[in-house]
Length: 289
Length: 291
Image 1 (cartoon, rainbow over the protein chains, first blue to last red):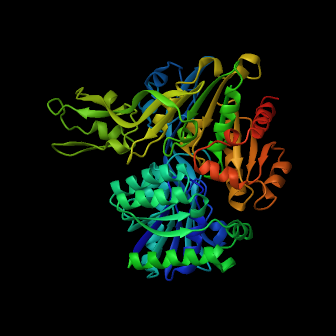
Image 2 (image 1 turned 90 degrees about the horizontal axis):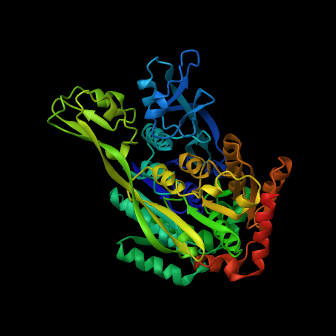
Image 3 (image 1 turned 60 degrees about the vertical axis):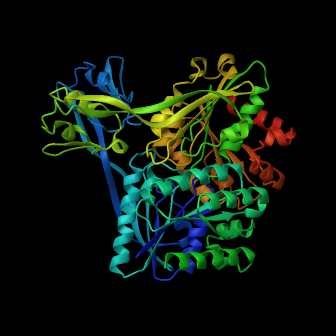
C-alpha cells in the first residue's frame, strides 16, 4: 500500500482540482481529504455518505457558578488569558482556552470540571471513483492535527480491508500542525506550486518540512505560463534542493469551468491542460511503484 | 481600529487586499498604519511591502526541564499534562517539546520542585518599516506544529490607540491591518479575534462559496462585523453574490480577473502600485467599512 499526499504550502494553488483528477486517473485507490478546516474534495467527487461519526478531542472547562467563590486562583495560573473576572464573576473564554485543565486542577472548591469536547465530524463515503473519507472540524475548534490523523487511519483501514493499493490524500495549506499530521509517514508528497513570489517562498518552506520529516517530495508547477521567469527559478531551486519537477500545467479557465460544473477537469475536457495533468499522473504512478 | 483580512479558502487574495488597503491608507499623512502578517506558516506580505527589518525577536514556549537530582519519578507531571508532552518511566522523564503548550501545569504540581522551564524556540518575529507603515510578521520554524503562540506575540504589538476604537476619528486614524492565515481553526481565530471588522476575501466558485459560508460562521461566533471582497468576480458563477444578498452580507469591493494584475502579483507588485486608478477603489473599500 502506497500513500501520496498533495500539499502546497500556499493556499489556492490547485491541490483539490489536481487531487480530484488523480482520483479519476488512478486505479484501485481510496481518497482522503485532510484539509479538515475547509474540505472541498467532496464538491468534485459527489460522495454518498455511508457513515457519519462524531469527533471528540481535548477537554473544555465548565464552571459551576454555585460552587465558584471567584477567588481568582484559576485566572492567576492561566497562561492563555482565557479567564477573566468580570463584575465579580469568573468567566472562561473558550475561544482563548487551550484546554490544559490547569484551572480545574488548582480550583480550591472544585468548581471547574473538564468535559470532553465535541469538535467535529468525519464521514466514510463512496464515490464513483472509489471510497472517500473526509471531515469537518467544528468552527473555531482546535485539534485539527488529531482529526487529520483520524482521517488517515480510516483511509488506511479501508485500503487494507478492500485490498486497495493506493491512497490519495488532499492536504491542507500551511506548514503547521495539520500539514505535519498529513505528511508524516507518507510515501510521496506532491507539492503543487505556482510561479509567483509567494508560491516560490511557500514552496521552499513546505519542501523543507517534508524533507525534515524524511518524506520523498516532487513538485508540479501550476499556471506555469503566468510568469516563465519565476517558473524557471522554481525549477532551478528544485534542482538545488534535489526535488524533481514532474509536471507543468498551463493556465486555462477550463479549470474554473469544470469546477463550476462540479466535475474533475480530466472528465470535463480533453485539451492541453488535461493532457499535462495526465502526463504528471503517469510520472507519479511510475515513481510510486 | 483593527481590520483583519481572512478567508476560508486559501489563495483567494487576502494578502493582495490587505497590502493594497494598507498602502492606500498610509498615503494619508494623518493616518498611522500598522501591518501585522499573522500567516506565520506561510507569511507573504513582506514580498509585496518589502519592509526594512530592524528588529527580530525569538518566540519561545516555556517547556519543562527536569532536575534529575530532585526528581523522584512520581509521575505527577505526566498525570497533569493533558497534551501527553511528558512521559515518566522508572528512572527517566521524557519531555516532548513539540507537544508542549507551555501551560505550566507540570511545574506547578511537581512536589519535589524538580521542574524549571526553559524556552523552546518555535519561531521568530520580525519588525520594521515599509515606508510609513509599521510592519510586523512572524515565521513558524520548520517542523514546528504550533502557530498560535507566534500569532499571540505579534498581536501584543498592536498600538493601544488602535484597540477597539469603534467609529471615531482617533480610531479611524490609528489603523492596524491583520493578514490572517486561511482556514477556520485556531490560527485563524487567534489572528482575527479582537478585530473591529473582518474583510472576507473569496472568489465566485463552488470552493469559494463553500469556504465563505464556513468563514461567516466563524465571524458570527466571534461576533465581529464583516463584509466580503469578491476577487476574480468575473470567473465562475453568481452563487456567492446570491448568498451574500440573501444573507444581507455587504459586498465591499469586486475585482475582476486581470492578467496584468496576476502578472504583477507574481512579481510581488501590489495592485495599487501597478495601477493608481485602483487607489480610489481601496479608499472606497475603507469608507464602506467605517460607515
